[in-house]
Image (cartoon, rainbow, N blue to C red; front, side, top):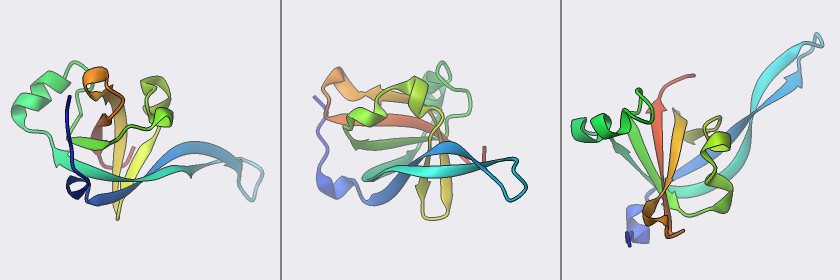
Length: 114
C-alpha cells in the first residue's frame, strides 16, 4: 500500500467542473463551479512516466496526488474537470486509485488552458 504523509501534500488546489449559464444576451456561457478544495502534491511527469502515461493521454505533463475522495474516482466524470493551483490550470485526463486501496488518488493532467 502506498503511504503519503500530510507534509507531502503541500499544495492547496481546487477541483472545478464545467457548467453552462446564460450570458447577458441569453446565449450559453461556459463557467466553472467548485467541486472540492483539497491538499495535493503536484509533480511533473518525467520521460519514463510520460511513456507509460501515453497510453492514457498523450499530453500528460503532471501527476496530482490527493487523498482518496469518492467524488473524484470516475474518470468519465473527472476528465471534464480541471484543477487550479494559484494561477495554474491543470486539465484532468485520468484518475488512478493507487493500489485500489481507497487511500490515494493519482490524477494524470496537462497544464494549460483547454
